[in-house]
Amino acid sequence: MKTTILIRDERPADIPAVRSVYKQAFGRLQEAKLAERLLMSCNTVESLVAEDKGRIVGHIMFSPVTIDSWCGTVEGMGLAPVAVLPEYQKQGVGSRLVNQGLSILRAKSCPFVVVLGHPDYYPRFGFEPASWHGMKSQWDDVPDDAFFVIIMDRKAMEGVSGTVKYRDEFSGGV
Ligand SMILES: CC(C)(COP(=O)(O)OP(=O)(O)OC[C@H]1O[C@@H](n2cnc3c(N)ncnc32)[C@H](O)[C@@H]1OP(=O)(O)O)[C@@H](O)C(=O)NCCC(=O)NCCS
Image (cartoon, rainbow, N blue to C red):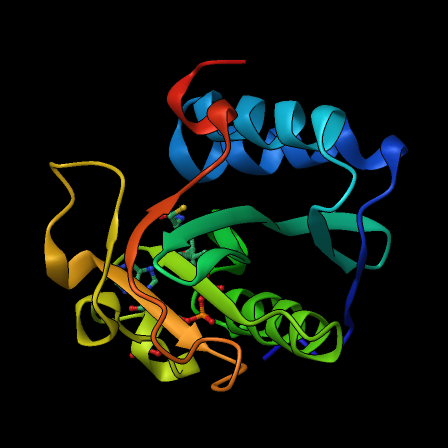
């Protein structure tokens, strides 16, 4: 792993470099634009960058999600998007971004965190299939084995199940 890498909060001046990370990691700008829309419209996002000697090499964002359950609406966070520059991938940068984000959310008493992603990647951070907890995503085409949750506050989440809703920015609604 590159030991010079620092994980820190994203600053407004990082936006062009973050955009470039997504362009190179995904070959498109859809995820960068989503991250920018969330950053502009929501003041409770957690947005972190990985920096190597002044160069932005990775980015992760967590934004609020809600679950309407019989005992009321509970707010958690959704991990998306995340990307690491191709030449920095498979060196632990993505893992550091995920783990640091989860630590911050745990410290803020976030009750749960969801992610839509690959079954080979996310369980290593403690994510479990959301279906084990009676949760599903708002999108019908998301397979059960691609939607994960970490329950951080078991007491707050007692009896909570149902459909997890992301912000409108995810549906192109804002
Ligand atoms: C996914 C991503 C953020 C991971 O970052 P990273 O710095 O390469 O991750 P790490 O070095 O911490 O972990 C590497 C491990 O993740 C695995 N991995 C990486 N991307 C994966 C994917 N899309 N699906 C499954 N496994 C993946 C690697 O095979 C490797 O596994 P190993 O540890 O068993 O060898 C990065 O690969 C990336 O930017 N990919 C393109 C964008 C993307 O797919 N983002 C996620 C969806 S929003």
